[in-house]
Image 1 (cartoon, rainbow, N blue to C red):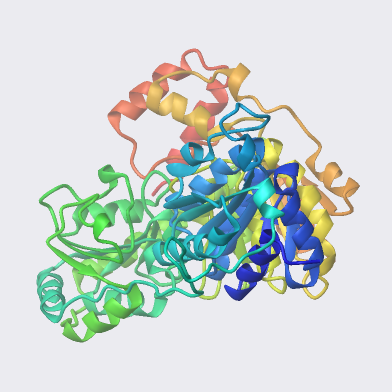
Image 2: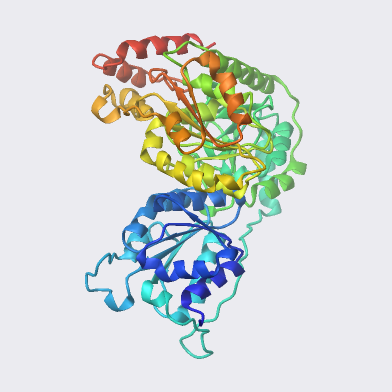
Length: 589
């Protein structure tokens, strides 16, 4: 059989080093699926339960490997389903290529079955989107899509109509109107000038109270961030996607910042006179120093991010680790004086406070306790996959991460339903490492339960290290939104919208051949985690937690307190909320 356009597509993907594709079949990509069948030994095709999960997994693959992620969907509804996962990749700056089918070129414009204007649909989420309308286009279109995705760390989309997929492949002739292309890309590497480094060092050396805020752009620069923080006698706070950028066992690391952050991080920002931002576009200005309070230096790869969140006095464009290594010799080491002592005392107090809050009684279990017990048992090489909900607060605050661990979640998009697909992508990429997904009951019912079937399909691969744990916090409530309604809008819980019906998560896992563990008593949490880590198969750990335990921000404003108290007048859970809020506030030092 002669080579088709679909065969040529897979051959080109192989040349780019792509060997895993996440997808769901459909008649709009029949030609591509046939090509996968002919090259089954060259690709690890992962069949998900829903196209959104394919896009989530492609983005997570990029996060946990540094490689481009590739997802595949059919025309019409399949392409539409990809959107949420693609936006997650776009907003967290991950290189993802989406390959989608389309109806036959000859039918387009006739309001044909499943005909959707895919260019319009995918233009906003994609930095590059193009349709292959002729076999001679295929190579330069797929090359450019991969090059744009990898070099710009963004989403690129290639649309291939189903009739084109099955046409004979062509090499473009050397004549006008045809284009040649090649494999490979170069990552842009902006490089701060020496005079810019000197100006930044002057600002940082002059500061008496230096604070550092790290984000995802600082991942991989742990040693450099630590060295600069030591030289400047600074404290280091972390945006959510920067949680793994530096270890929590360092006495000057204040932990997460913002609504999900610690009081030590809030104090660091309130009292600093100099701010060093490293690879972050943390969005919440109310948790940064007041304008004019601090001189600021920003390190970032992209000029578009400069002064986005805070007025910057000196910008250093470049890779975080490389730029910090060049900056370090210009810094004058500061004595660990009053400022550093204050930071370390605040960090020590913060960990004590978090433990005290986690140990408060609840009905039946305090959700903070779940994460506090997990933190003590985390393996050195664990990969953590979070989701979006009230449990994200405890992931951000209560888990002490160490060098060598990996972790991520849907950051800027903050999409529910990302935890299980993120974890599965991580385990497929790193089968010898333990992986934990941390999700709420709402996210499990949204798509996590379905994607456990995908886990069952592929878990037999993980013979050397079968540790794959899905933690489900079962509190019967879409809890983060409930608390936001109370504290931000001043409205009581709207039970018809917020209640999550009960579901036997642990028993469902057992039907799939996993180990199901259900915990209703906090005293059993430590043993439950130990049993989960020792299991010879995937585990679903279902913990019944109290929805009334508040995810308290570092500081409660008068407006938030006023709205919360007003909402509780008519809230069906007011007495439990008042009791747990009082316990959490009294546990603060």
